[in-house]
Image 1 (spheres, one colour):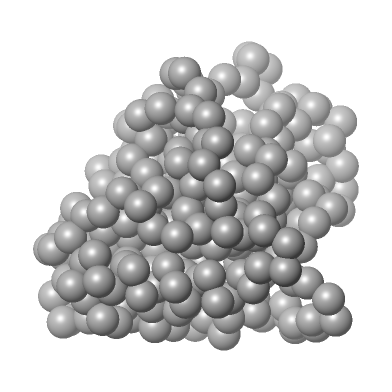
Image 2 (cartoon, one colour):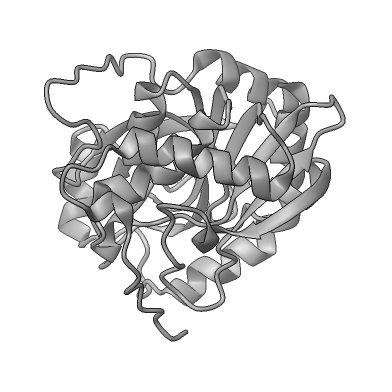
Length: 280
């Protein structure tokens, strides 16, 4: 895939910019563009999870995320780069974010977490963060969905600015994890380690992650989860194991493998996530 260059000016990059005011502006634009004044939950759908949006309810509006203040263009051509408003059977509204900005893109943490802050500003009180991840546990084979119980942030960055102290003791909601296990009692849970990327982790780095308590490795989610908690949202995190981590897997790692595993699993995990959303 060819890279897309995001050269457009972004208000989040301006000196003195208030990221929360920009998030409120984005939320107002989302409301106007979708015709929906309030969303109840928000979902960021990572590798393999996209089909959930089609299964959880009726999509009433789809808009290019880059048309909304503060959002960046997709890093890779072919990524959806959209925001969808979905009417759930319960009558509630879900905002589906198909426009994740990764830390490795080099735009700064504010842009990484802007979608979460904008979702909170639309009224969403629950944030569901999904990703594709490498497994350190050999029992979690590619195609396995895993609940995130906790994370280790290895990016050396935080979305919190200044003297902002946020308790992360129960960042990943025990209530939501329990609800997910009501849908699928076989779901395991573990600790997700976010690395900076975009290179895959070395075998030594994977062993370090294991030694400090990690079970999954990837390049997203932790920074977003911190921002969601700062905004007062309840967080559910889920990983799809797309490969064994370096040194556990004996063959070379590749993005093609991640996409292939996600494609093969998307029907099953999409239905799982849609069922979870249906119980919220």
